[in-house]
Length: 153
Image (cartoon, rainbow, N blue to C red; front, top):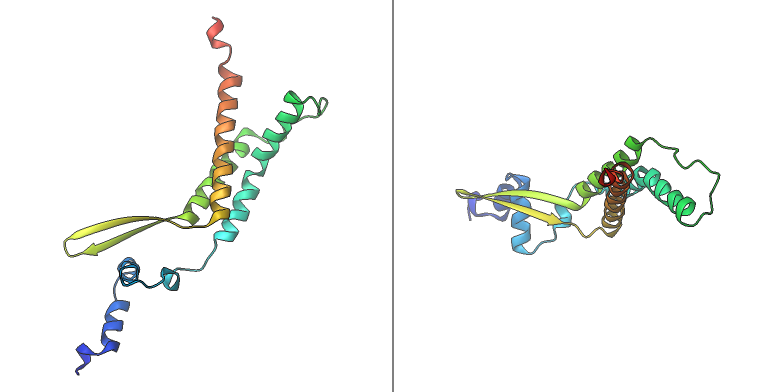
């Protein structure tokens, strides 16, 4: 058995390929992809995203308490600038989407295969959904507050 036929040579050839090809080959051969993934930071992105979305959560909660339930009649609820409200939620969506969605490109002969994967990271998906919901609520609030008097003209 020569060097070109040895298991060491085949492992070396596998290691010299681009990362996407290695991931794709592991997937085809049934290996777990966790062995070649980078450092896991999805817990931190969820925490950072949650803190970035806190001003929007506070604003929506205080608006419901003040205007719908009448509990906080004399409290100023406009603590944060609108850029912080919407920007924090958009930032939370972006970093949690970065942690959940993975893109891969594999070269197979003369074809390129683009793969999109969704990681099963429940905490990131939950923060992503909550932050996206707050973005929708804030944009609906923006439209209702600023364009409600246009139809009367």
